[in-house]
Length: 170
Image (cartoon, rainbow, N blue to C red; front, side, top):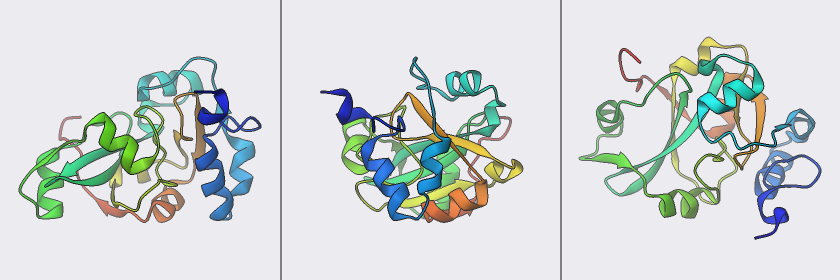
């Protein structure tokens, strides 16, 4: 796999994500992407690299709801309560999606999944905790790049439903 498969040479974003930003009329965000030499696969690594609060990271997590992929956007300091997701979706069972399901559904590897610009359309839930910030940072399609966005705008572009699915005490 060449670097071109992983990132757009000018921005550090994954080429699919760079194309998605252009298609959404968000090309100006390409200039705001921050690229890091070391991977920031976890929210804690990303927050440390950016110099922001852990809760200002937007995690994009894929779950399987009765076998159907669903994207949950959650602040970096919190955990998803799968029982709350199950109830929200009205399904029997919610589990973390397998690595290959994440890649097949989104087109991106775990650690670099952005909140939108995916290969397929999936149902998206965004936890209200994200709205506590003026700006949140999310992966730009690979573990080496992040971008800033106002949370309400991010939720809108992701086509997300605002929900309360945060694990209490997290």
